[in-house]
Image 1 (tube, rainbow, N blue to C red):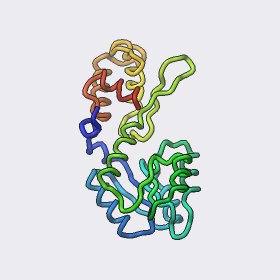
Image 2: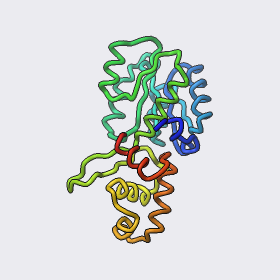
Image 3: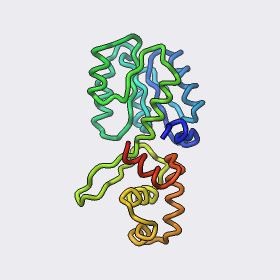
Image 4: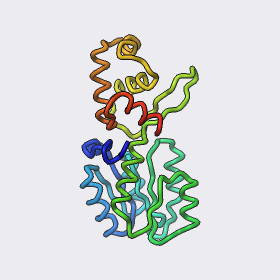
Length: 211
């Protein structure tokens, strides 16, 4: 499915993009870019401010420069990924860094962008990464387990419904398992499809399975 069709900017309103770069024009440019896409933004120009803001509210996306006032930020990338919080981190480089790029990708960076940044490509990469936040992993009983990471607009009940739908259960079966009516399941299913940009149930399952 074309991400331009499936992605809906209004879903960004609860998502925070934390921009971490010591260069003011870069921060200002990215701030405008992502606000126009509907995101909330936070800006840090030094590591102390980044740590403080990160502790106050975990972002949905981090944009992190390799070098912050002379400090190597690859360890910060590794710490974020070690948290297993599912927060995607995009690295920014002031100049091409072959070794740094390889190390960043090995450490879990979603992508690396060299300045000047291709704004359209950058936004598309963030969109695609957030859309893939829903993924499937095997559970102990052999059923598919749907894990939601970053989709804060999905309620706990909607997450339960998404898991059951992905496991192939009907509205009636899912309602029986959750103790609610099939009609209520149908309402939750419709909301999940809207939030994830699915056109129908088959499309919803395909989004999850191909993520």
